[in-house]
Length: 334
Image 1 (cartoon, rainbow, N blue to C red):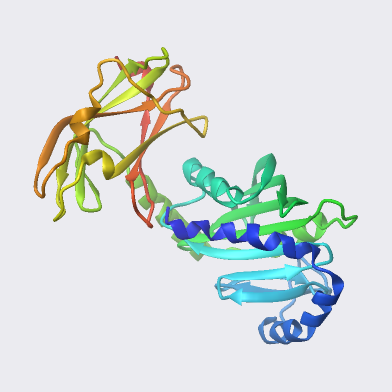
Image 2 (cartoon, rainbow, N blue to C red; image 1 turned 60 degrees about the horizontal axis):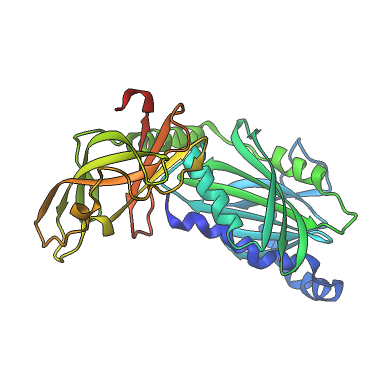
């Protein structure tokens, strides 16, 4: 997926605002309420009562308690502040879908990477607006302050909507009912569903097929064969044999242009180091423009040989991550 998906990292820098004292909050009320008056729809929804107002982000409507202070950052990122808490609503363009387990793992890694510490309590598949969504509940720490956070994500047209509801752990406030009301106020149309289905189909089409060339930026990589091996510690490894073509105008080495990852049970496997019979040197040779390397090898670790392995192939340096995937039945390999 596109790295813009890591927009969710901004939550780490604003969680501290949840504990802003009342004076600062009051000083912002006049300007925030002015914005809210301009953007709030007068339309009432059946799922919420008169104490909620309808807002929108990228044409998606949702209802927020009218007592919460709104702060608008831009068209795709908005904040709402109850006492001792914060709700962030964001829209991020992607080339993938949250139905892909690797994409969800990347999302979790993104929004937790800047937290000082965190503990994911649960991951749950839920329904928002009649469509599949995923909810994460966690305890986390930012700027030496502890928070309780609930995150919900779902596909929306060619992107992802994410809602972060967080509050100070030492607060007596409980916003779980309000958050449920906000989620229940969202309605997704059949048009959105059709758009998401197209995205899923496109994502599913990026499949690694043995013997078929894959264009990775200015380079062409063709995986020819999979086999099993053992590293110097006696752990199992997948050996990937590939051909590679330099279509760029500069000299470079194959291993500097792509990355391979293995996943089992939605968790990345360990690196495989010094695998018996593997010569990594072929893929480390310098190749001039139009040069071709054949029979190069790479490896990824295997956590459990009795389970399938998901192999992920992507460019090493790219702001537009949309990996190729292969589901490998290890029992069929030698």
